[in-house]
Image (cartoon, rainbow, N blue to C red; front, side, top):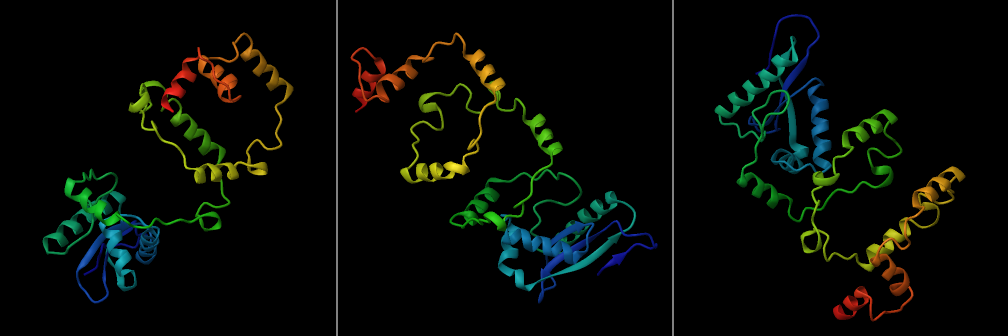
Length: 257
C-alpha cells in the first residue's frame, strides 16, 4: 500500500497509519518528519501520560497490540506532506476505516470545533479517571530550568495580562467572587505551613540590604498605620482578643456568631 516519489533526495517526512496487529483497518493517520517507529513510541508515551482524546483512549486500551505502517514518503516539501495527510485521511474514511483523528489533517491549526456530543463523550471518559502524578525525579523537567531568555520572553508576553479589566475577577466582590465563602481545611493549611517552614521558606536566611530598607522606609513615609479601619480592627481587636462596642467590624462579627 505504501508509495514513494522518485528521486534520491532525503525524505521530508512520511505519512503513517496505526492499526491493530490482526486487523487491516487503520484507526489513526498521521504525518511526521521522524521515523514511523519513533513516532509510535511518542504516541505510546503520551497515552501513558494520560492524554485524553478518543485516539489516546483507544491506544491505552490496545497499546500492546498496535503496529505502525509507513504509507507514503514525501521528498519535496512540508506543504505537500500536509496535503498528503489530508488526502489519506479522506480516502481511508471513504473506504470505511473508523479513524480516530479529530481533524481532517494538514499542517498547522485545523480549526477543530468540538460539538456538544464530543464534549459529553470526553466528560464521560474522564469521569473518575485517576490522574498521573510524576513528582520529583519522575517528572520530565526535574533538575532542569528555563533559560533567562525564555523567562524574559514569558514575562514580556504576560505583562499586564491580568491587570484591571483584563482580570477575569475584576470588579467581583462578595458572593460574586469565585472564592467567596471558601476556607482551607486544617489539613491543607498544615501542608502549606510545612512546605514554607525553615529552610524551605524562599526568604530563609535572607536579609534586606540597607538600600532596600531605605527604599521601603521612604515608600511608607506618611502612610497612616494601620492603613485602614479593617487593619486597625485586626491589629487591635482580633489579634489581641478584644472587642469594641463602637467598632463596626466587632459588631458584625458578634452578629454573625
